[in-house]
Image 1 (cartoon, helix red, strand yellow):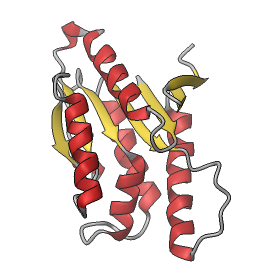
Image 2 (tube, one colour; image 1 turned 135 degrees about the vertical axis):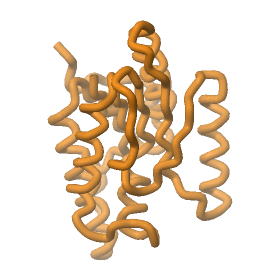
Image 3 (cartoon, one colour; image 1 turned 60 degrees about the vertical axis):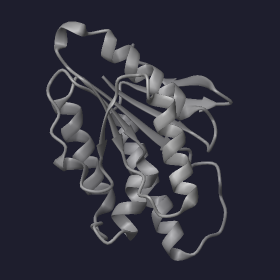
Length: 179
């Protein structure tokens, strides 16, 4: 199962994604898989420390194993029964574009290759992304490229996904279902 969850900042998408990951992980106890949180946020300042701490507190009793994955998603090697929660595409994209360890080029293609690999190798893959489709602002070239890369990744991931859910005010709205 591949699930893409999008929403605005503070929409409740992370809490919903964690809930779904736990449910999907429990729904197949015979698979022998574990529950993994692929953490993409780099610690850059006090705000990022605060957000990381908040997310750790949200998942502390949910039995996630955390894997730090700020770049090079394709290097993760799950077991066939594992449930993975990738949090989130926006951080991963920014890291690949702007961090010293990032690729700088072919960002969308590299991230999508990693997503496809994880989807094939794991039982469940839940991917969190920000809603980048409603802004319409005028930005500098670098920011426009970042938004373009994220949109490409999310559009292609939506095609791959069994389900696409947008979370608004904590309410999941199903855009694409597994039926």
